[in-house]
Image: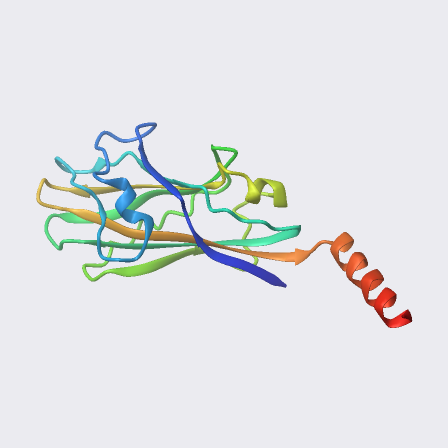
Length: 183
């Protein structure tokens, strides 16, 4: 099995398709540098908009075996119930597959990566290499928390793809090897 990534998104935006509160400075989540996108709930159980990550610039050929997402996140330790609501993939810009949100566990008060999916997890999808390579392949995150003092932050997210190299690539390699050996 081959891997590609982890790759970071080139475009990160607030998407108001869900929730009631926007992510502030979403582009701050472009790299792991302690400069963060933030969301502050205004009351109990308030859900954020999507924090939308696209433009991962994959160039894969073959069969997709798994998708692994890592999100580096934390909360300020004030308020309560800082949790995932939605962690889903985007294919061609549309929500796709299983919601991998860990809705039963609070976000950490010390910044850490949370991993979703893995080497053999396709998120209930059968994505093609062209889906993964598309400019609008990505992920969304929505979170919730209780109270106006609860600040939730995302420093970075990345995606790693696990895949099996396509048969045509292998055949071409075998032909090239045979060609060079016969000379």
